[in-house]
Amino acid sequence: MSILTNPLDLLVQNLFFELPGLVDRGRVVLKMEGYNVTGSIKIKPALFMIAELERRGLIEPHRSTIIESSSGNLGIALALICSLRGYAFICVTDPNVSAVNLRSIEAYGGRTIIVDSKDANGGYLETRITCIRDLLRDNSDYVWLNQYANEFNARAHEEWTALEILDEIPEVSHLYVGSGTTGTVMGLARRFAELSPDTMVVAVEPEGSVTFDPNRKGRRLIPGIGTSRRPELADPELLDRIVYVPEIDAIRMCHRLARRQGLLLGGSTGSVLAAIAADAAFFDADSTVVAISPDLGDKYMDTIYSPDWVRSSYGTGATMPDDGQAPLPCEPLKEIVARHSREVTIIANRCREVASYRRDQAKQQQTGT
Image 1 (cartoon, helix red, strand yellow):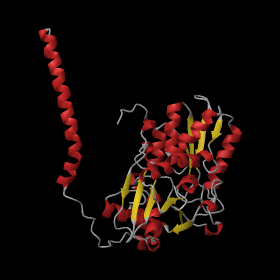
Image 2 (cartoon, one colour; image 1 turned 30 degrees about the vertical axis):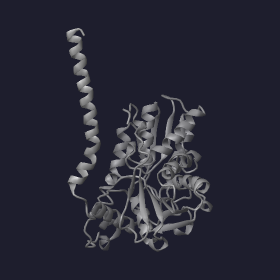
Image 3 (cartoon, helix red, strand yellow; image 1 turned 120 degrees about the horizontal axis):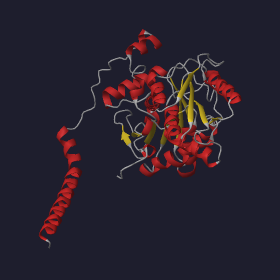
Image 4 (cartoon, helix red, strand yellow; image 1 turned 180 degrees about the horizontal axis):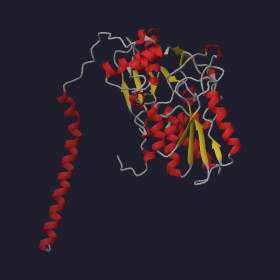
């Protein structure tokens, strides 16, 4: 691997993790996006959307201000990119945003505005967008990316994420994707329709989201998945199924993953894997189910992984039960050390050869030969 000099090159394209024991038949593979710079899959659409504005000459460093509505992950990604490229950045968010995400945006130099009035569907999205429109009206140098309608949000996943999956796993029977702005699922659905039309693409929604059904509006507390307003990008015709998951099931899945699999992952991942577990009867021995894991669990320590928050948010009956299942067996540590040491041994031998060559060269220079 080459030594990088730009943090925006810290993109992990081919990190996959197989989850044994989640379903009885077939295999489930997670595409792990939380190890990208800024900690989520959102760095991809952030790069695509700002690059398109630059290509069109619509923004100028040290003059333009980028503004966007985000519950956290896109806001963090945009804050970094704007800092590096010389744009100011304002993230309009709501009370569901975590303190970690707020501090991350501010650490990269972004500003945050928190709206606290709910919209007609019981969420905050319309309120956030109204706030943005008010700011645009009063500030001519502000530019709104509008991830909910921006084709380059979806294109990032059509051109990158989909091909990364198919390069590693050419035969995908089912693809499960959490649905927020719908950029990820729409971009993937388009490319899979072209290159892997037999793959069943499933959008996973939290109960309470109105993205595909306005009659489902309800309270939602987990950020990054679901909406209180249908995004312009959303096209249900591209999907094979839409699955709805109660938030408490997503939270229980997150705790199960941490205790049994050793993976600390975010709420969207918990939702997607809860959907897969509920759909287990649809899979057969030849099924290869791929799920998108957008981020890690470190941003959710005060919410999803806090027993007090879970109880206060979902009631005392929502405590995480001990299902009596022990963590999956781990191979002896000496085997893990040996596996990683083999490559290190090759490197060590190569370093010794280089060191020996340099010593020989130094001796020759000293003797004049």
